[in-house]
Length: 207
Image (cartoon, rainbow, N blue to C red; front, side, top):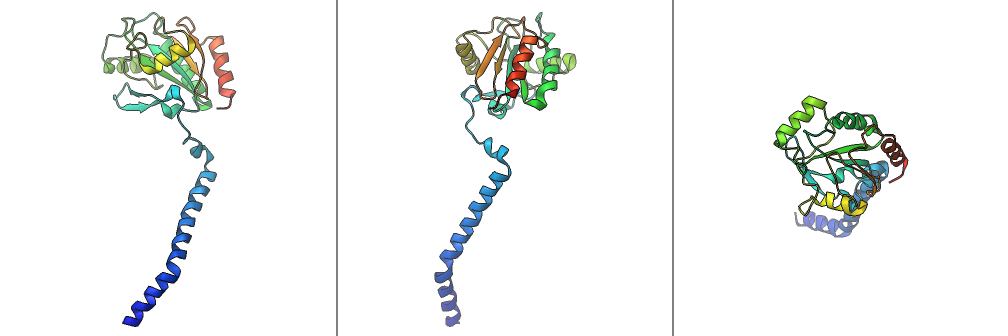
């Protein structure tokens, strides 16, 4: 019995450290191989661009959503309203998102009552967008987009472009690198050649 214990103790002293090092090397090797096998997944670990490093509640269920999930994409930020002369742009924005989403574009809608044309609750807005225009692109709860109380995202967009939203359906185009490309007034619709050209160019650029 004592001989068995001594033998086991001797084996642990002799081979234990080597076995531990071998196991550690195997774990590290597995992690490296996984990263090499899936470089796209590994690349998503990079720091989120400052402009997208914000969290907003999703319109439909008010659950927090990080905009970092859109890092590496071309992003079109739009402040929206349900009772505006430009509300019909919802249809064009949905078409735009559907047409280009597989290429890397995402339209983000931010309902706002800054111009007194979005009085309803978040549920009212969600139902209106879905039932009237079949909106599927990501939308968030009512957001202040101008003034001292504006959401930090819109303060940054305003600072970087020198232009705050003048009305509903103002648009900001953000490149794959997380930097603002340009801003467009409400008069520039989703079908605008100017906007489409800028989106096409941004989609071809490397992040």
